[in-house]
Image (cartoon, helix red, strand yellow):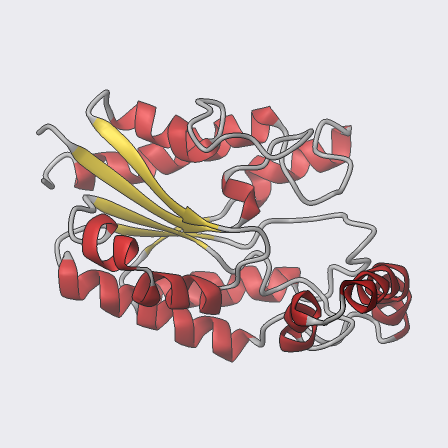
Length: 243
């Protein structure tokens, strides 16, 4: 089949390398590694932004006319690479963090960002990372809505959910929610007949050996390659029969 499209809904992990953000067409990024593994006729449609949660992906898919009018109707397969940000520990509720960008005048906004960067980690440590960026029940809810939307337009398109990515970030000094989030994602995927890809064993080695981004969140090129290859393998059999 020709002209197949892989729709990827994600956050900065889809376009950020070990040093900086990269152009989305960079062949080293895992969505492009996966597409290449599936065949020369497979192109990536990427819908992603730094810091996106499952809720943000749902809003984008339903509010952006290019997303619901172009990307979704032609998707041969869909990758849900959201939930990573959701499971990170939070110093303040996500809506409050996102609201910093709307503060005016600019001097107030800049001071608020500096204060958040300075005091966020100590607050997370003091609260032992108890609060998540997005509660698990909300993550599950918006993932379910995403899948319902995909299956309305493309009922035969396979869907893969990537498990939450491991991290070791100074800005988020707690891994309190990670293991529970991986288990919840696995259960959610099984309940909704969605393939699940556990990326922990593919990403964690680069956090240990120091080849990941110094921010402790974004991946090494080796991790991108491993995730892309595993994702391509997960989709290969089903995608071979889709248009």
